[in-house]
Image 1: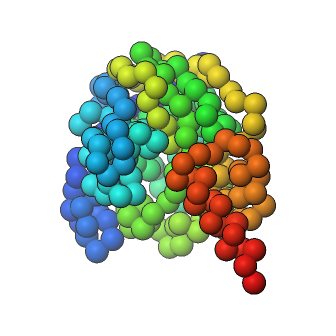
Image 2: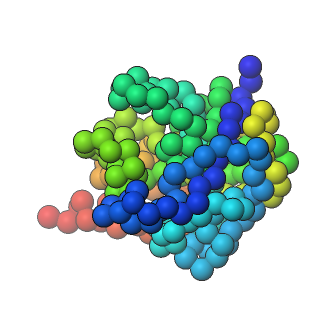
Image 3: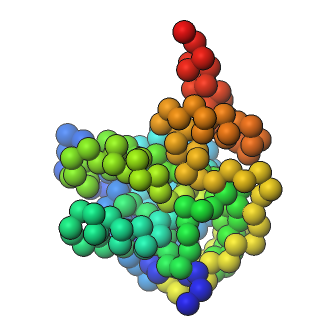
Length: 221
């Protein structure tokens, strides 16, 4: 079996899930198909790149560079074994659950042909307090980051429909070699990873500026 989409998942906003019972759209459930498009700027655009999928915190989620979130089923299976409980497709808040694809080996800027769409890998999922509350596991953010395999955020280059069973074809891999887990480590204070990310030339805009600040802070006595 080649790389493919196992499930496509959307979530409606629900209260009682996030920190202090806040409303969140992290509870994503499989559906028959999804329409994806570029949602526009974070905070002022459409939110999710998936039609009908709720993004409740537009400051930290959604927008063009976080239009979709992909997680490998193999990673969910890893955590199922670690946690001793079943984790259904969509339970990490992902829009695409894949099979046969090492999502965490993807490079920033890598492009995937998925169904009718063309998607571009933009970086790692950074775990938040709502994710920790939803999982209900002690020290979840620390454990998730230490494992280093977060899945990947995706931008929509060409819109269209994605269905379970659609193949995932990697049609472009940049030459810089910056993999998604390196960026995750950089966000969480690994200075060597941050320098590697900066030296790659793969980052731009807010991501580049923030990592420059991380490195500058570490250099300050």
